[in-house]
Image 1 (cartoon, rainbow, N blue to C red):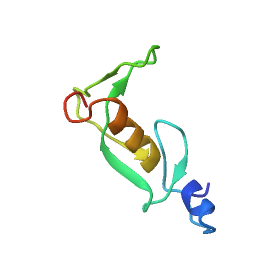
Image 2 (tube, one colour):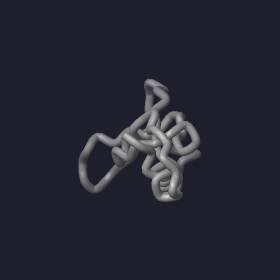
Image 3 (cartoon, helix red, strand yellow):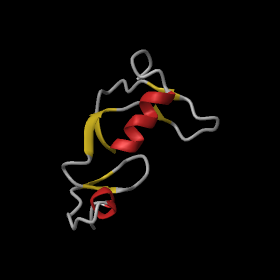
Image 4 (tube, helix red, strand yellow):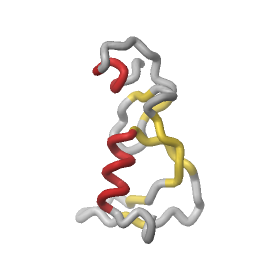
Amino acid sequence: MKCYMCAKEGKNTDALAICIVCGMGVCAKHLIHEETPVWEGDYPIELKPDLEHIKRIVCKACNEALKENCMFDEVC
């Protein structure tokens, strides 16, 4: 699998991981490895803090969306 973001830039870089939110293949340059909020799969989406403090891999776009939509400093 190739990094989706690198492919958009015209590069041919192997993906090192897959975003846990959207499933996008990402390389080391485009992945973010940090604690993320937990979503139990219900709608409307309600993000909760991760009580286990597990670092997960997300792409930059999903990381920005999480920060924008969940009061990252307080809840996540």
